[in-house]
Image (tube, rainbow, N blue to C red; front, side):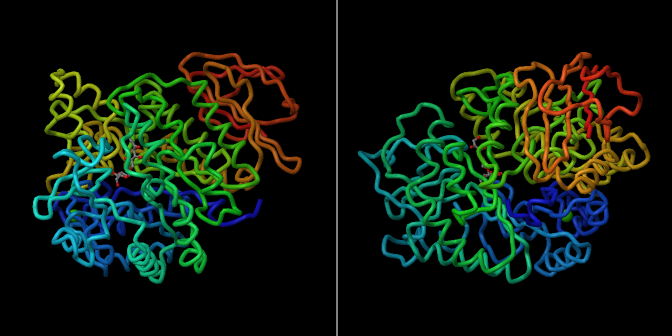
Length: 554
Ligand code: ISL
Ligand code: CA
């Protein structure tokens, strides 16, 4: 396995709208990020992934781009961006931009032109089809609800939007579109950015426009929208013409990328992407109805997914390790315990992130154990996905209170409430009126408090990131789960070149006796780090793990 900087790096993801507001308009901005660069550096991370900051009317918080060459007004100017990039580089870190090129905003000038007439030179930049008997061209649904086709009066045709109607899909069949994408990537790379996180890259190549035979959205995404016939042609072209000319990293986001096809994207010989985010473990709590149809997480399955992905990628490709981002719930609320064991379980999750093979990603606020939020009213939310799902829910005659409860556990805004910096009004996030309310627990959970408490989650994240750096073989070492069917404990070996590690993570609030069997002798192993600070209870290869206790031995 080739060693590279992006395999050894730890990434910190910023959702700029919610990170830090420098000018009191209630919206986080680039100057706000600049003010916190020393803080980010203090975590020990190497790369910042910045969610979209391009010009956008914000129908989907920046994932609807109206100008790829400019910065969103609320976030600042290109000069601010340049200052940010400099500040990141001066501190020895790198910057990953979000690249959203499956779709643009309907306010992008390409789309404004495209709409004008059937023979406009930009018509084929997007996907226009005529209807069938006064109905849309096929039964495709938008991932955010409703038909994926929007009728346009002016030319009497429909355009495709896999997300909101303000996010028309680009037509990648058109070579001009691909060249535009190559150009805009070069623009940012020439400025010095260090790579891209590629939004829904798995759906850019469209399959024949026949009806989806699947009733549920996830099956439609996996089998109809994703992995289209030309996806690899486009990605290889993008790599050859653009990416390969720079020393940068890429991580593809993509529903529908699975164990069977992953190496086509990230196999080193495929020459497409460096790594992808797979969603196996992230969809375990979604039923057939998708995000707003919650089911409980199967822990055995959760563990198995990590083993399967490691097995599949080892020696041939590279993986990403993440538990949360701006589209999902807070990790301590979802995979940990955000009540009595918030501190222990958040630390345990940090141990998991930092001891696996793959590049770890930390999402803002995770490092202080920020939790889900439960607003009283649907009006307190501000997410187009939630709103569209709410409308559909009501249209089906269902109860609005029930929907609100589901949003409390499943909604994307759980991860989007502003970053909690201190216990002053609005957590020091803004001097004005925040675009989204704060989680009221900010008075107790915030960076300032965590800095002062030597046992805080924050200090532990720093320790774990440093631990990974001090034990570089943790990056590349082999991975094997111990007792895969154990109901409470996630335990695994990591080993390489005669060095071996044992990781024990008790994902429960019960005290568990855990017997380690298998390939390495534990009697010589010592505890290197743990999330409790007192004596470990052990006799030989049997360990007694307390509530949410995690241990790394080596
Ligand atoms: O497949 C899904 C159905 O729930 C989604 O999780 C999908 O992978 C996700 O919505 C894609 O997310 C990305 O693209 C969206 C944007 O809203 C998200 O914030 C972004 O991360 C559209 O650009
Ligand atoms: Ca601002």
